[in-house]
Image 1: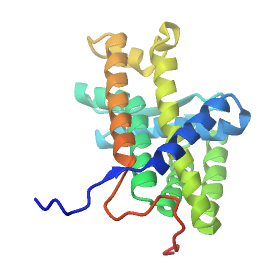
Image 2: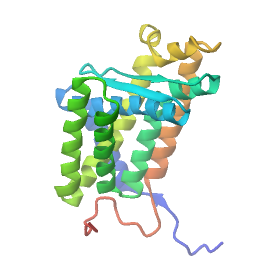
Image 3: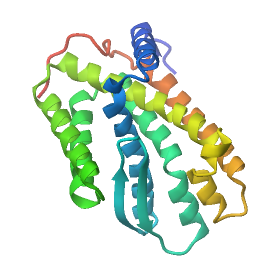
Image 4: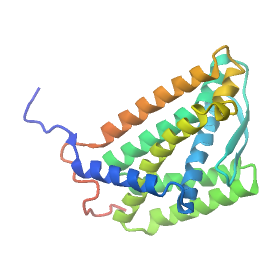
Amino acid sequence: MDSSLPSSRVDAGKVVLLLAFVAVGLVFWDSPVLTPVKLLVVMGHESGHAAATLLAGGQVQRVVLSANQSGACLSVLPPGAWRTILVYSAGYVGSAVAGAVLLLLAFRFGLARGVLAAYSVWLAAIAFLVAGSFFTVAFCLGVAAVLGAAARWLPLLGVRLVVLFLATFTGLYALFDLRDDLWNSAARAQSDAALLAAHTPVPALVWAGLWTALSVVILGWGAVLSLRSRPGQPSTLAAARDPA
């Protein structure tokens, strides 16, 4: 092994930026300004159920989002224990996967415009294909338009900041969602864990523990890997010529 080859290292600038965005999210957590971002993460949770349903050979009937940050994915599944476990687990764990992937794409690979464009296409697809309420359609199309416009016309630095904030906030919200829904006994009784416990011999508390442990590991792995710079990679926020 050639020791002269450059190795990845923790990028101090990325660490500072990540901590800054976490602080912003915590300070303004209850601000109505962040409500659209929270709803975006909830839509990601429900999209996890939808994607798992399709992967399991089922059919998504509709996805519904509400202004109070609740959501639902109604689907039909073929018989099978593993299909049920996959679909019910894909909400909370799927949110953690989404947060980790966004952190990697934003902090490590700098794929800013592509991420916003993908967000826009995903939301438009939800609106046209499976949205089950007027609010869901309006939210998806409205946010898709905003993110699509940002991907097209914002300067590269602005696009990067938006994606970095979405990545950080998605991970943060995923952790808070686990805490509020799975580790509050009253909320857990109405959660995906309780629904899955009704279909399996495994208690809801055990599912809550498994999902929480897996989600924390996934988010931790994503954060650690994303904060390490690739050999020869410039700072994420360094001035760069937009290839588009």
